Image 1 (cartoon, rainbow, N blue to C red):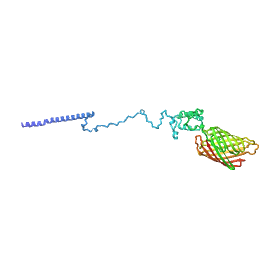
Image 2 (cartoon, rainbow, N blue to C red):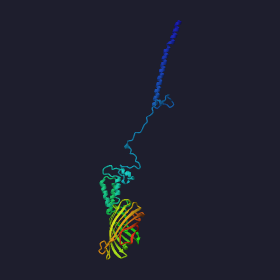
Image 3 (cartoon, rainbow, N blue to C red):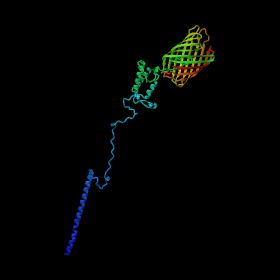
Length: 414
């Protein structure tokens, strides 16, 4: 009996152990499921942003949260927004751009511009043509621009050329409005003065308003001089009055001159004149026709060359024609200094039956001039030139009282 009781006690101790273990396992599984549900609940609350701020999850969220990717704005299309223009940028697509606003200030930049298509010019070609037209008459310049447009029909300077053509037409046909050319380019070539070199012992062939004077001091016994005032009432026509002394005696010599050709573009002069000589001692009257030709060569500041021939027809008995011819050259290397040379030839009784040996007096003169006063006007008014020359008679007959001398001269342009 005792053994039976002990066996039941042992059985009782052993039997409940698996049951309790099963309860413990059940409790453990329930707790795990509960915790899993709480985690899901918390995760859902996190996704819905309903997690209370005072309840911690016990989990470092930075381990699970990804950094948002950097976002860059989408590029703008080129046609959506026009680029801003620089303040000094030239807009070559703007049809309203005035050609006069385009200025070229560097020669190298002008030379580098090339025509973009056949029939188009460049700034350098246009500028060179302007220089070429500087000393032309209106009709000559008009022909040059017509030929220019014919050669370059797509010229970039068509507007300027057309405006200049209108100005030239107004000048040629005399329908310019008074004062309408103020501010335009300087004096037209057709009105520009040449201010050709003035000889000393020869006549001036330029029809120009001026006053010239000089003194002749010769050896062994000669003293003379002259003063000559000339007024050009037309560009190609002038009158003058000379007071002086030549080898025939004291003279009063009025006269007129007309330039058959006077071109500042080519620098050419062709002048004819007629003077009346009133000789004082002895007293007689002579008529002196003259013709002269001059050409300016554009080297330095100008090389003026001239030649002239004149003749004195004296109104007295037993007289003959007195021939006079001469050459004159003056070179100006700059605006201040000028070098001149003059050759004069006087002859009389070349074919007179009563005179066996003709009268001859040939001289040559070398000298220097300098600009004593610069021009005060565009035409050269107010300019004063002064100079000195040495005269040598290389051939003479009868005039033995003159063996050479010194000339002083001055010219004042009105």
